[in-house]
Image 1 (cartoon, rainbow, N blue to C red):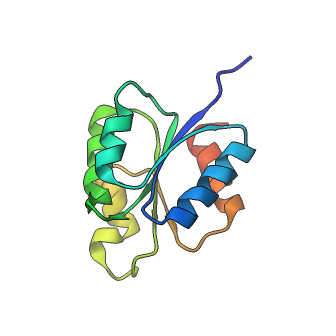
Image 2 (cartoon, rainbow, N blue to C red):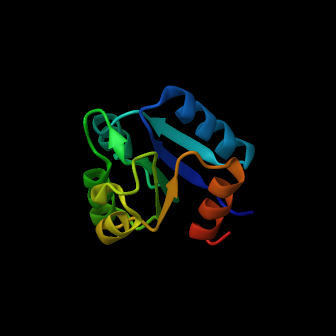
Image 3 (cartoon, rainbow, N blue to C red):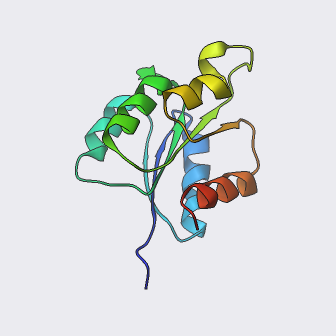
Length: 124
């Protein structure tokens, strides 16, 4: 029997965070979910997630900086999500891939898109 996959989600939108948690739990994944960078760094201690879902705009820091931190300290794939204007270069697909994200989903997205990409990134 394979180990239950663990997904680590960081998003400051409470409704979206709850929805993302529900979507992932329906897939049978264990979910760790927080709303800011400080909580993320604390919760990461002692946890080794199989995939990260990171919002790029966070209240206490830049999602890109968090992605850099994750990439330096973890091997798990990183899925960046953002509702930012696509012309904003710091939130573009190119910018997020350069700092370590494996994929970038633009909000709003369909739940199926999220699941498909998470499964692809985790090679399920």
